[in-house]
Length: 322
Image (tube, rainbow, N blue to C red; front, side, top):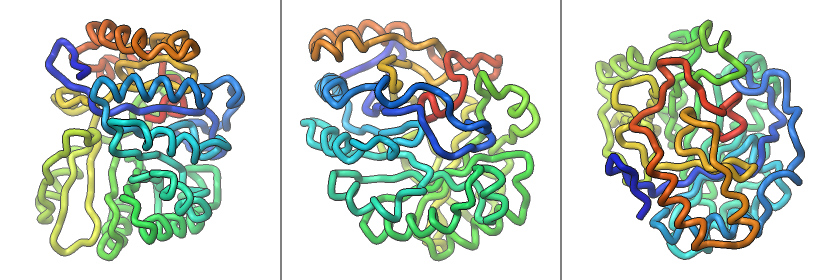
């Protein structure tokens, strides 16, 4: 089992397979993607070596991220490869949802268990303003198809300063009859967007207190769960999660490592510049990779340094999928 010097065990790998994305979200790629093509990112064989190595060290859940992971033509093959690896029990992905209606069934058949979809507003005009794409209805249709296919569906929305009471009420009304988990995520500072962060960061703590006062109750976390604090209410079909990276002890329950699309291991989303493991993947050296992972974990810090404004290698969230 992968374990660091603070007793944290790592059941969960977040694997980015591309940095490319065709949305232009204000907090991520407002000017669009202008980086390398998918030919520069991990190949199917490299991914196989990586996943085999992690699975042999106790990893049981993989989240496939980007960029927008579904832009890779071999996305379904990557899902199938990950799910068929001995030891891997749960496959998730994070997507903007633009292709979900068309491909949810195919991804489910390939082995996908969970999908997280980014929806920052249920108002079509506001959605278009935030994402640069007038596709809210397409995304909502995709959610319906994903639920029908039996996928575990979560919705991510980033808290921004203009997050009005009306916007919150619209989400709450939607959750009355919609069986998904809606996760409110605090905006995180990245290297390219310091000014945007200063103008738009909003703490999730007041929202947490508002939910508790309204009768929302906390759920217990699974051992392979992400960082969200989740809540349920008996009058709602959906649930609510809060991801608050600036809160006290946020890193105490860390159970995940990240590998970027270029083959760099990130012990934390924000703490360092990434450690190249691609040479092991190119040589299909599973044992060498595993030994290196054990060694690298000795350098994992107790916490990130977001409050000090340190963002590590993360220039924008498309690099590592958040």
